[in-house]
Amino acid sequence: MGPMPQQQPPAPTSVSVVIPVYNEAATVQTLVERVVGVPLPAGLRRQVILVDDCSTDGSAAKLDELPRLHPQVEFVVVHKTINQGKGAALRDGFARATGDIVIVQDADLEYDPADYPKLLAPILDDKADVVYGSRFIGEPHRVQYFWHMLGNKFLTTLSNMFTNLNLTDMEVCYKVFRREVLQRIRLKCNRFGFEPEVTAKIARLRPRLRIYEVGVAYYGRSYEEGKKITWKDGVKAILAIVWYGLKD
Figure 1 (cartoon, helix red, strand yellow):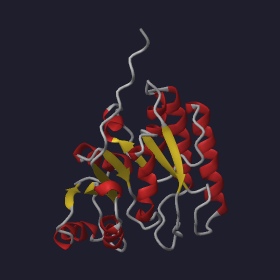
Figure 2: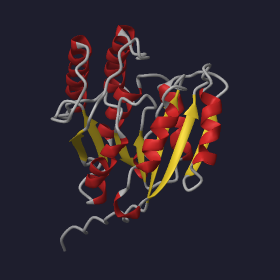
Figure 3: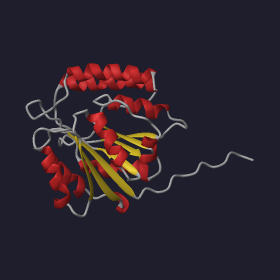
Figure 4: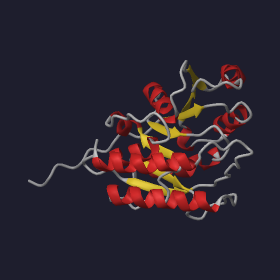
């Protein structure tokens, strides 16, 4: 007898969008309007999970208004009492996700939810278990800092050396998972080390996951517009890549 055919996962019927929020009062309502307004393929239901990471600029009050403004959408709003960072906020959001597919979305308008259909397509077509966006493969982007671009490519190359993946943009916000993938890994990093940690841990799963990349639009903010990542975060990312590349 030959090997048993691998059981195909059931077709997804719902999507959870997890949005960590820290001091994004100026952008979060516009962002959520785009998230709830983009048509989803195949009539997928959507759940929007907003995790306020102890903002101090009025973001929390704006989040509480959103379920009333968009009653047709299922919202989950989480208010943290201690600022712990993006990784911790995402873990809180993932724990509340009920969708078959989970999308990570930043709240700062640098990424466009209009890209959801093409991000979802490889999973809906049963070609992928995980989809990464990429800012470096052909989609429109705002011309920004050279050193940020170079730093992102260096971090991605270093990560690829440990994971044996061939990603072009490990640090990208847009990461899309079958929910059962997230349930199989234990995430620990609280802050911006989430990106190398989740990449290292999905690369280790066996049987090997099917990971796709698709180009996404990117409209990077300047520091004057509120960009938060600095060179210190880059150093921490290097340490995280090495740490999670060597340890679970």
